[in-house]
Amino acid sequence: MRILLTGGGTGGHIFPLVAVTRELKKLAKEKGVLTMEIFYVGPDDFGREILEKEGVEIKPILAGKLRRYVSGKTFFDVLKLPVSLVQALWLVWKIMPDAIFSKGGYGGVSAALAGRLYFVPVLIHESDSIPGLANRLLAKIANRIAVAFPSTADFFPPKKTALVGNPARSELFEGSAEIAAKIFGLSSKKPVILVMAGSQGAQSINDIILAALPKLLVRTQIIHQTGTKNYEQVKAEAEVALNDTLPEFKENYHPIAFLNEEEYKHALKIASLIISRSGSSIFEIAGAAKPSILIPLSSSANDHQKRNAYEYAKTGAAVVTEEANLMLNLFVDQILRLLDEPEKLEEMGEKGKPFYKPDAARKIAEELIRLAE
Image (tube, rainbow, N blue to C red; front, side, top):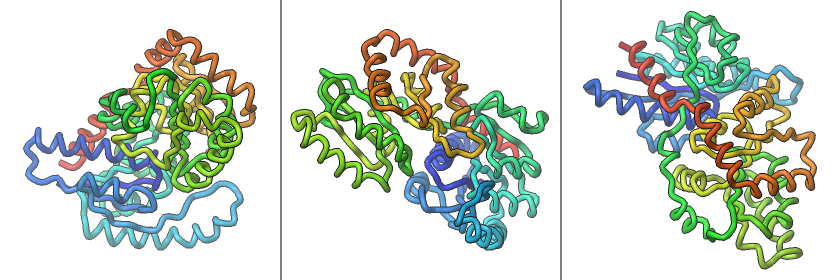
């Protein structure tokens, strides 16, 4: 059996593909499938090494972003689209998969379209409350559509749409606080804030955290995933700021470019509070039963991150601070008030758990096998 994976090239697309890949392999053993070959066709600017570790064969193609706003990059991306489709037509023909799973994003459009031209069944997944343009287009040709938010189903044909949640790696919820303390050099005396600025980095989150360090590090410890592009700059600015103000508390700050799975699961476990964007990480935070402050990306398409954040916040598991309202003193006060109420933090974490659907990856893998048979 051959399954082809595709999607945009960010962590929000790649890590759900990892979760589904693992479930496909488990199901192959359970069902006695002699061979389970899994391929990825899409942009490989992020995720090649991650997917290769899972035994996925990578076939990179160009990916032109579908924009609905004015950008100087649009001209070049429009030129990439036909090239991308030709590449996908050739690769899909060579692989000839039994089913295709697209995680969404502009990177998954060409492979999914090529597959349907060869009459290969396609399953797409939408992880945001408001579908992106890529999935709105692919919904017309998809055999099955999976969604993460209840409200998202309203955008798609009901007969082929199912609410499954967002596929997350179950291994993320097997962390150890003791191991986290060793990895990051943490003490047991102060609460830990985990800051996740995303795989690509988030300038507004990095900036507010850097500004808040002198006030926060007196009472907390911070694990700060900065994003690979921003790491050196953030690290250098933090060092200057702390040398000038609080050199004795430098050991409480732990910037890291990118948390690999092993580091991430232990960081999730030890965190008292998480500060994050409001993409697919919401489901990982919910699965870990952790309280959070969500800072939606203000420039996200259709303002979907803002809607994601407020939908999740209805559970009582998170508070939302929009980028326009990121004022230093208010932000710091909000964090410290929450940390002063450990019972409330625990309650918030528990309220988020039902939002996480632990069988999402399994359901998608099962449906892919049904389509492929």
